[in-house]
Length: 271
Image (tube, rainbow, N blue to C red; front, side):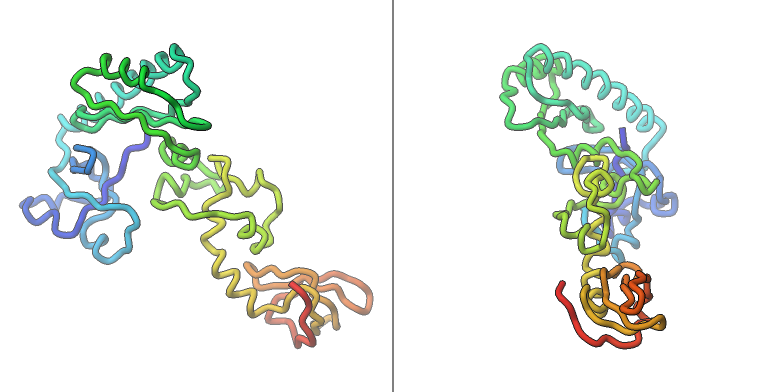
């Protein structure tokens, strides 16, 4: 299960004498969230937080994690695995149409949250009563999430060979459309443009605005242009690589021509 990383708020280290000198990226600390105590590695330090725009919330630091804290964290992971198995058995017993994703305790074991996916709403009142009786003195919460949130929680490696954006730095999901892929001349193949969650890849939005701006500087498809090889007509535009594909008038050859090699634009075609 991915370990949540913590971003500290500027000023949170001031009351803790000597702690700042021991902190570094990856240092395990105990911190406080709206949902309770948590333990995890530091992602950004206060100076970085002050200078870098952060989409996700920062949290106050309570203390550096001790050896006892690290052991408790390992215990928490083991108990989460047991809780997930126990909940799955009761979901099956009640015949509920829900797929459990994970079980998450707060560091102090006060709250236990089960994340699940489902096609629609699920009446889990009987299940909740069972879980409340099984995990006494623990607040139980069942939270339905989408497939993109599921990928974020489980983590993984994308087609690019890097860890999933959503489970590392991406804290807010942006609306992704098929038009973004078309604007970037990407293959109209859903399997190639979809991430591990089965939805369109979040990275389709990263360069989309830049591509739209670049396209304004390039001749449109159908425009008559002059190239070093002769006059021709633009067939398609590759804004990401600042190039166009041209069909020569003289012999019908198709060439890929960098934008800076277009000698003149003699007309504009339709988009």
